[in-house]
Length: 251
Image 1 (tube, rainbow, N blue to C red):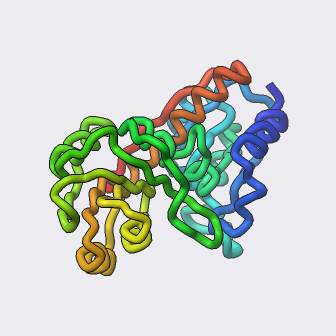
Image 2: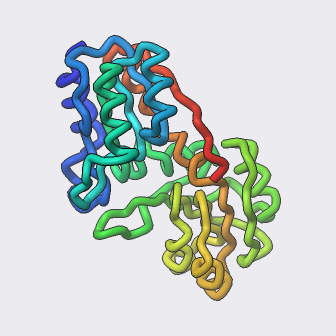
């Protein structure tokens, strides 16, 4: 299939034009091939993911964290090496940062909400005028430890638990990746816990003083959900063979 057709589908499906204020340069970042028989998806555009895509004979690599961000980037050092590798292996690169957090079907947060069977999920988490997270209700109240165990089973890996909220959890907020800064807003919208990828020193005190628990399930782990779901959409709707490249960082 023509690369430009796949890019057009992704741009439209993920509403890329609606995220101009994102720090990521979303969309096609490197055009190194004109046709695609197989696409790989990964969380990060690293040297390892590029080499893995090439080894699996993928002509397109779709990632959550691309190479180019908001500021002009000198093509030197690690960036230059990655771009050279993409061209030498004939692997094009497509990035979707906030578009893949927010999408109601394949977004990291929407998929996570489905894994936890949250009812009536609603957007929350304001970032430059865009709601990037999801908040919803559990089918029945559970303890924070029971919810943490459910999160661990859902996505694997280890978690950090900061039990600052009520003993019983009813309403859950989710912001994948580096989302602990949304703890206060999550509390203000009635959430008993915020599930995110990683915390920060300042977010610790904000969550404690807001009376909301934090479950940090790993930046990487919480952002594998969207790319994997998107791979299924490409296969189902475009008939493209896809594969997931798993390169966990432990963070």
